[in-house]
Length: 287
Ligand code: SAM
Ligand code: GLN
Image 1 (cartoon, rainbow, N blue to C red):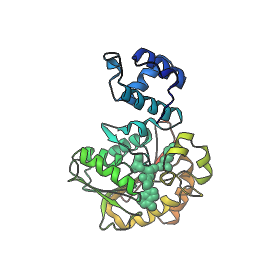
Image 2 (tube, rainbow, N blue to C red):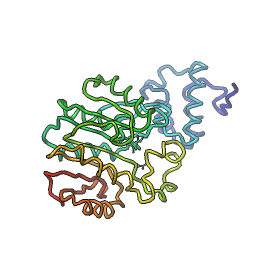
Image 3 (cartoon, rainbow, N blue to C red):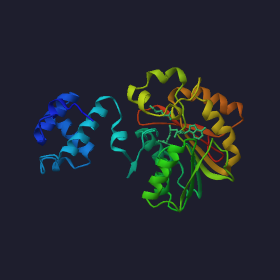
């Protein structure tokens, strides 16, 4: 296989490699060093310690630089993502957890001070929310599901790696099919982007991430409506459902919840002051 390495071709010296990456990606030296450190999984300060690269290291690094240049999210290249205190494995084809979802978990912690015993997550992706909740609520048993086999495979890896198998179980399935019993907390970050807005997502999302994880159908709330309606059969009397939502769906969801005669629900804002989280539960007042 011939890989064209441009400026990279004749150099195995780290200084020159940094210069080549900086030119190729049109970033300054600082950023080039950060990118190389991340792509090689080395602390940045070590880059110049062993300042010549082996030929195969160089080939791998360059092919990764090219993937980055083509818009692939860095998480898919390094196969790693940070979610709160955990470094998780992320496989291409599985939705990359977002920072607003870390905020969602913090919000859940504030709103659910009591210790839920049984938690259900619908659409777990790489397992980020369930793993964070397992750390927050050390006595809880968590069941996490996803329709995607690849997501379940990814989440299984993370759960095993973090030694949470005895508390986090995984199940592949569509919504609540195969789910039995009731839960104190049902959590989901579902697909919620209205179909018409899918084209406006960044190219790296549109071209590399699984669109079934994001596309919420024509009105954006199709999935959430089913999630809520079917979820009521699985919620304990004083249980709570927590859902990450799109900021433009608040009106539609309020209408839907009212039409379902659901009296206790409330919306919460994210750190950008946008309503992004919906909580439904018998023990909570609407606000
Ligand atoms: N929970 C992860 C997070 O917050 O990063 C992933 C959220 S991602 C936005 C939505 C997830 O829901 C995807 O992993 C997708 O495969 C899953 N999903 C989509 N449709 C589903 C369905 N009908 N039943 C179960 N999961 C579904
Ligand atoms: N906020 C996500 C994005 O920008 C969408 C997440 C979702 O649909 N749950 O891609």
